[in-house]
Length: 359
Image (cartoon, rainbow, N blue to C red):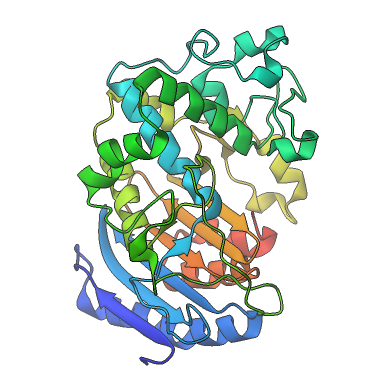
C-alpha cells in the first residue's frame, strides 16, 4: 500500500499483534476511500495505547508530488493551544506564577489599559476561554476589546492564549518557543515540532487543500503564536499526549485542576444533540482541553481548524489510550469518526462525533 498508505509499528505497548493487524486492515480498507470521497489529500495518525505511542500511520499525499509519510509535517492549527497550556502548567508547577494571580501587574495590553476589567484577567481565565476577548482582534477592528467581563462567560479565544503568552514571556524573560523547547519539546524528544518555519521543514510540509481538494498556499509563523500554526508530526504530538497521561513534571494540585471541568458547557451542547441518550454525563472546558465524561469514561479532546487544515487529538487519562489525527484538507473532520472507530476509541465518544460532527 505504499502509494496510498504508510504504516509504522513504534511499539506494541500491550496490544496483541493480531489486534494491530486488525486495526491496520480496517484503516487500509476505510481511510483511502474516505480521503477520496471527502477530497482530503492526506491524514497522519498516531495511536496511544496504555500511555505509550503504539502505532503511526500515514495515508494519501502531502502535496502534488509526494506521498504522506510519518515524517510529514502538518500545521496543527488550534492543537497548538494544549502545547501552550502544558508550558503554563509546568511553569505553575515550578512556582513561577499561580493559576489565579492577576496578570495585570506583569502585563497589560495597551488596547485595554484604560479598562479596569484588565485586573480580572488570570492564567486560569485565559486557559478556560473566559477572557471576554473575541477569537482574534481582527474581528474587533484589530483592537483588543472585552466582549464581556472576564470570568462571567465562555468565549473561545486565541487572543486569550496570546495574552497569557505575553504574560509568561515577561514573567520568565523568555519567548514562548524558548520556554516550550526547554520545558516540553526537548524533554519529550519532540524533535519535529516548531512554532516557526525551520530549514528542516523543506520537503516535509503537508500542503493544505480546500473543500474541492484544490491545493492552497501553506501558512507559517514568523514569530511564535500561542494558539495556531505550530508544525509537527502525529508521532511528536502523541508524545505530548503521553506526557499528559503521565502527568510529567506537574504538581498534583495542577493535575487535579487540569482534569477538572472549569466551565460547564453541557447546557449549551446537549440541546443540539439529536437524542438525549447521546448527551455525556458532564461536558465542559478544562485548562485548554475539552473534557467529556460518560459514566466511567473520561476523554480530553481538542481540535484544530485553519483554511485547508483539520486536526484532532483525544486522550483517556485513566487508560492512557488516545489518538492524534492530522489532515491537510478542509473536509478533514468528516473522516475523524471513521478513523476513531477503526482504532477502537470509546464507543460513546465516537457515537457523539458521528451524530454531531463536533468541532
